[in-house]
Image (cartoon, rainbow, N blue to C red; front, side):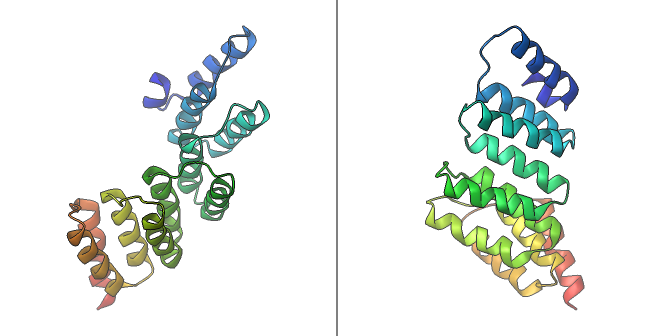
Length: 182
C-alpha cells in the first residue's frame, strides 16, 4: 500500500514476489495494492495480469480489484475493456460501488462515449448508489467531449438537486461545453 501511494509499481511487484517465494499467504488485499500501484504507474497490462492471478488463486475479486483494473484501462484509453470488465463484474455479482461506477464513467469520458457514460450514471440509482462529484464531473466531461452542451446543463441541474458540489474540473468541462456549443 505504501508502494501504491508512491506509484512505485516495481517495488510493489517485488514485495508481492518475495511474499510468494517465501510461501507467505498472500490475499486479495495484497494483490489489490499491487494492482493499484500498477494502475497509478500506467502499467495496465501488469494490472490485468495480477487481476488474473487473483482469479487463478481463487482469492476472490472485490470492488477494489475491479475498480483498479477499470481505472488502469481508463488511463490506457481502453474504454471497451473497462466496459467489458464492468459487465463481468455485474455477471459475477460482485458488489458494485461508486468507485467502480466512477472508473467506468471515466473510461467512457476519455473515449467521448457520452451516451454510455450517462447509462452508467443512470444505473447507479438502481444499485442504490449516490453519484458524487467525481461521477458527475466525468459524465459532464463526457458530454462536453461529445458536443452535448445541453446535457451538460441538465447534469449540472441534477447535481445541484442532489446537493453535490461541483469542483473546478466540473465547471471547466461545463464552460468548455458552452464554448463548443456556440
